[in-house]
Image (tube, helix red, strand yellow):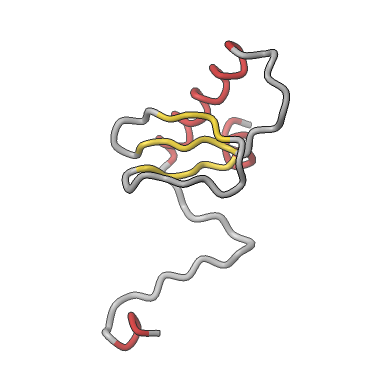
Length: 86
């Protein structure tokens, strides 16, 4: 409300929609995820996605639902990675 009063854009992402992520970041997150799966086949548990830096494209596989991110990082959910790959 305050942002709208100040003439700034009011950014609202509905809960059933994912925020838009750069396709290059999604592709890099996919490489991180699939490399992790190949290197660690013994790990049991479903990851929730990949936390990845938008600047360096380095990241790690995340197993929690609400990860804490650094300012330059974004979170790419596993379902977004899988839908981009297929």
